[in-house]
Amino acid sequence: MTDETVAFDVENGIAWVRFNRPDKRNCMNPTLNRRMMEVLDELEYRADVGVLVLSGEGSAWSAGMDLKEYFRETEAKGLGAVRKAQSEAYGWWRRLRWYGKPTIAMVNGWCFGGGYGPLFACDLAFAADEAQFALSEINWGILPGGGATKVVVDLLSMRDAMYHALTGELIDGRKAAAWKLVNESLPLAELKARVTEVANILLKKNPIALKATKDAIRRVGEMTYDNAEDYLVRAQEAANSHDNEGRKEGIRQFIDEKSYKPGLGAYDK
Ligand code: ACO
Image 1 (cartoon, rainbow, N blue to C red):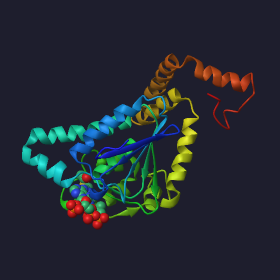
Image 2: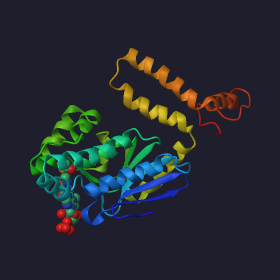
Image 3: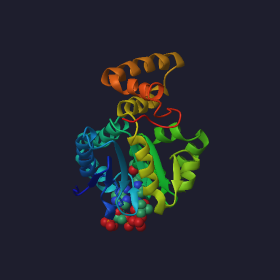
Image 4: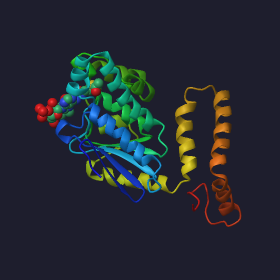
């Protein structure tokens, strides 16, 4: 299904969602931000969706916020319009950070500034070697807001984060992988096949366990060890209440049936 600003297809358990303003290098205007929230909403609990992949049409992943429509035109309407536009953008990024299904950013091209919000929101990220990333805010006279500063501080070393934000210099996919901004980088021609491979690994796992695990990874980072221990006990018990049979079946197939080894792969759902 396609509309003006966001396109998506669902195929073999994978929702392929695409920023769809290629003529504008997929920069995020308020229309796209509102539409993306609707698309995420529509896909989150669909039974035929197990993994969501976010990529961009054309040469860009996303050229960040739309300087004309998101900044200049909303600022001209006053503070209320600015806050509304911010909450629409931050809203779908937050929805994506805590999405019910695992998510993968497939960074096919340009990725700037505000694009780091959805990049970080995706659980995993794979980039084309040819992709280009920058915190270009400094180049037009603002600080990296909308969470972009937080993203680089969380993911990069302090020195790399500082250099990246102060210079606004481009880095390619390889460097983004070396800096841990993305998991891996590979030639654009191989990107979709690799992302499909990873998505298929995830599709074999217990979906309740996937959601509990991705939330745990994001949550425990800011907890003490003791708080994390306590949170994880409770999170597992909550997961058990949604999925009583899954992990019992996982144990049964290993111990009784001897049909798989958990150290080597997932049980048969
Ligand atoms: N905001 C508004 N319009 C944009 C943006 C943007 N972020 N990015 C691209 N566009 C528009 C251009 O104005 C142009 O519009 P036009 O066809 O009506 O003239 C069209 O998209 C194509 O852009 P070009 O610059 O012609 O494309 P090119 O491939 O030569 O360059 C590049 C691509 C490098 C991405 C360039 O468009 C660019 O620098 N964009 C801005 C990137 C950026 O700094 N984003 C803001 C980050 S900070 C933040 O998000 C808070």
